[in-house]
Amino acid sequence: MDNETQQSNKSEEIVNGKIEEEIIIEEIDMKAKIVTFDIENMANLLWSWSIYGGSNGWRAIDVEHEWHILCFAYKWLGKKAEVVSIWDQKGYKPMIKRLKGGATQFSVPDERALMQKMWDILDEADIVVGWNSVRFDTKKVQAKMVAMGFKPPSPFKEVDVMAKKKQICASNSNKLDDTGVEWDLGRKLPHSGWSLWKGCAEGDVKSQKKMERYNIQDVVLTEKTYLRLRPWMKTHPNLNYYSRDIKACSVCGQEKTLVKRGWAPSGQRRRQIYHCAPERGGCGKYCSGELLPQDPNSKIIITK
Image 1 (cartoon, rainbow, N blue to C red):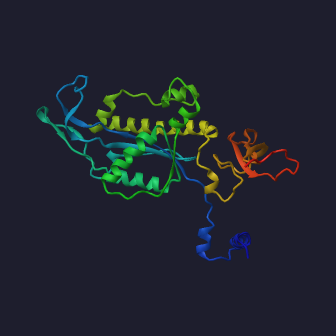
Image 2 (spheres, rainbow, N blue to C red; image 1 turned 180 degrees about the vertical axis):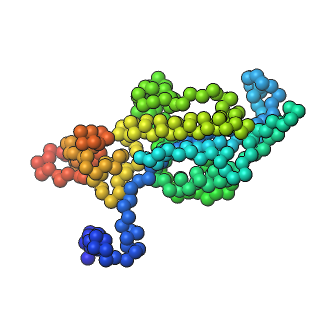
Image 3 (cartoon, one colour; image 1 turned 90 degrees about the vertical axis):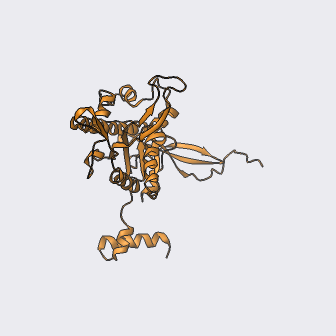
């Protein structure tokens, strides 16, 4: 019995409810799990001889407390955005505490529970989306995980929307806020600057709540830019690898939106081109399909 017949029999047995539990587990629908994330981190607390610029002005003599992650927001595609914050973790103490008499007490927040949640999300995800995430967010998270002795999460693909925009568009700016305005998708949440980060470090509840809203809006806006740019990406992970339907759109995964749109050369052969048609609710992506039969009247000359 060939593989296709075996697969067909398994599917029939599933419908009739006449299979063992382990086979049911194998037949669970496999769709790509796509998550967009963004982190907000605190500055380093350090000693310096000068407050001015120049070749040596900002060089640290010593680092009292290294940066730590304040919070991170994440959003599974099609789901509501959520935020996880250091101040919500058990035993949290503000980094900066003002004492009577003008003294200041510093403490280092425990980030392990925060990083465990981040690890769980990365371990579950197939595709991780971010804005400048390859150069910043992912490396910052991995720096903490490695230092804490975490093992790597299961492999995932990354889509850095800022990097993709640079490849595809020649815009005046590649900042997230400017891109949101340019594409009429929205804006980042305005804030007061450094005072917001300082307020979070001092345990100010209003500052912490605003930081969470700021973080969530970044994720929501990043996902919007991702969906806008996705059909233009030439190297987006192929979602057909995560689905049992190999006729789905390779970037959005929709199954009933593809229409044939001619062919493209592939070596000495031709390959069918499909369009994820917007008029059918598709994303607009053009996808390469199967090789077409060789035309017996072809005039192509193969040279050695």
